[in-house]
Image 1: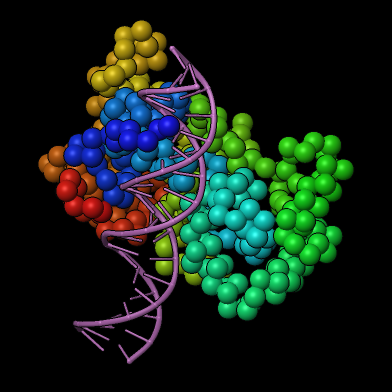
Image 2: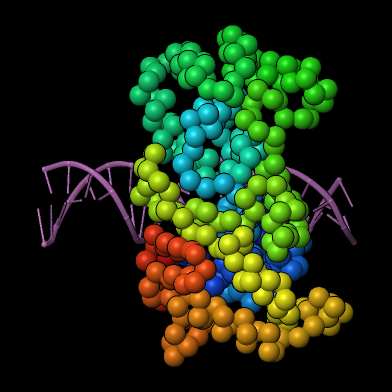
Length: 317
DNA sequence: AAAGCTTCCAACCGCTCTGAC
DNA sequence: GGTCAGAGCGGTTGGAAGCTT
């Protein structure tokens, strides 16, 4: 089942490697307007030279409104350690207990920090679980009774049971396992309202940390890239007011959503060029920014830790 | 200053799962 | 029940940035 299927996209014709701000904005704007019912069709409809999988990954891991960036708090790390002992490498499951954190991010943190920390602390498995109990005892998220269990599965089940007592439903998040009510499934909502942050919980589309400096260390202040949802309503009102693209693949029956592709697109492109520091002489919208773009006048900082280079189809990143 | 090494993470790849037909 | 397409997941990797010598 599912074996031997064709590639998800023509790799010769899609762009790969790091995303640039203009691509991000295109993706955000498209999903805001149309949602993401069909990832495979999305790049074409949004005018992106990307594979659908790549768009999905970018959205889920970085662009989606509820994604939380920056360093992991101690209690988050402890939760990961604890859940990993129970669930193993089920990163998406673990992520579901950490609102705003993605499976990819958790996987990276595990592989780069937590695994090393655990292995340096412990010689054998039992000690590992004991140390986890120690770790968790300092954390606000852990029900201590969970760690009176001798095996991690017991601990998890006990946490679930205690939660059932609290909430009545086995499907609900165990209270002991989360520092806040679970909200990580926001990604399931296909249509995203970015124009009115106040109607959604959390720092919607604040984008703080979307492009944080990867060199940051624990406790260092986070370098941020704020797309100015809240600070510059004019910008987002403009996005809202823009008539969406009418790219290939969107049929005429959809025209209530995608009426035209003319003046508004030009306005949009000009705006992007201006804001992203793209020189129209270099090809306008399609040109890669050669310098770190600064969202002048929008109270933003955009830090790309990757050196942005002109796209070469056959070179990987 | 620069070369070599290490760390880290964004993104890709390939597989499995799921639902529609 | 079989097949297929799309979505999702987990493992892996490329390369930038930081660190050491």
